[in-house]
Amino acid sequence: MKHASAITTALIITAIIALGIMVVGVSAFTNKNVVPLQNSPNASSANSSANSSTNTDQSSASTSSQVQQLQQQVNDLQSQLSQASQVIAQYQNLLLVLQQRGVISIDSKGNIYLPQGVPNSSH
View (cartoon, one colour):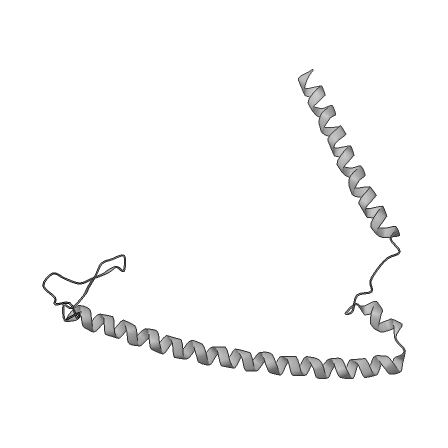
């Protein structure tokens, strides 16, 4: 008896959800207030062939320009990354030298400590 009521409830809930999905789908399908997509294939086929070729030329020039800008950004970021890596390496070397000379100690978690007896730089 409990199984039958659970199955019936599940079927009713499923039917309600399916009906809701169908209502939304039909509403979207019959909606007359649509905005055409700018990059859709249908938008380019609606233009005349002369406008289409002009748009294609402009589009490919724009795409080429965008590719060049992105390549320049990649090069700039690679340069910045290289410089940052060099700075990090310098800091790592500095910390290593300070640790070797006993000025600092670094535990396994990366915490840096001043050992006892090391004079503080504030005079």
